[in-house]
Length: 330
Image 1 (cartoon, helix red, strand yellow):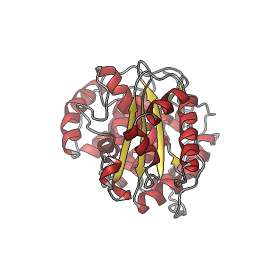
Image 2 (image 1 turned 60 degrees about the vertical axis):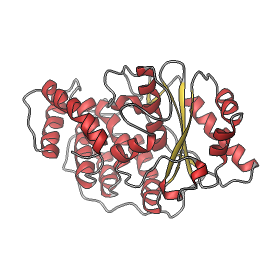
Image 3 (image 1 turned 90 degrees about the vertical axis):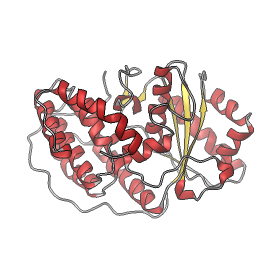
Image 4 (image 1 turned 135 degrees about the vertical axis):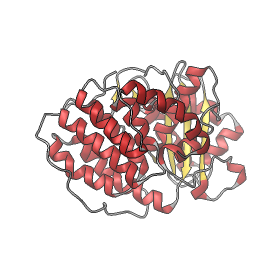
């Protein structure tokens, strides 16, 4: 499986400290782009696969078109503008692809629950709660989604939702501040994820967007290292989705930097399990022996356990995942 990301090699130096990025109080309206796109839909062999969250070339453009149509609809109806976040797209894609793989599609997964449960477990967003708009939950508690299957175009998805009173209500709900359109799996299963995040999460997530863009365009590990330090210092659990693809980077030093970054995020945000998922699912399966070794060392620091082989680590982790998903704790 290939990711669109190629960089030149460089020498390794220790990760320097850096201050947290300056925070902005309000989200900006323009959508945030997808930085890493898979060539094909991912093969899914277990429900905690991190690969399920990344965009595919087949659907990335449609996702962006749906988001723009939804924003246009809200503007015409006098609703507040919303910001499209890759953090929400990631959650929705995992939800859609797991449902497709298991032949069961809907708002609630047999294993994971709702998209809000994924947000709590993967990102450490403690206050995320899946709600229907009619419940009038506080904005900081709201993470919900419109679900659809069998679409093949932005107009098709939006028309289906706008023709359904409940789905239309979700699209127009005034409390929505963020959206993320996610499509994946067979038949184009889709989730349009809505969120009204706490002010603290909003400031962290929005302040990190320029650093993510800088990380994506960094030409070497030396250039990326201070950017990574700033991302880690922000203590935002969802940052792992921007770092994990670097485990498959062309630059071996960038791959090792990704391991360091994932470990640091987990240490800084212990309630976020996403970095562990990434180290197991991508780090331990790397073709680079040093990345495999460093990932195993990082997992030993995080969990206090030690296994002799990557297969033993993966077997233990897959057995642990059900309990972690059910209890959101190790």
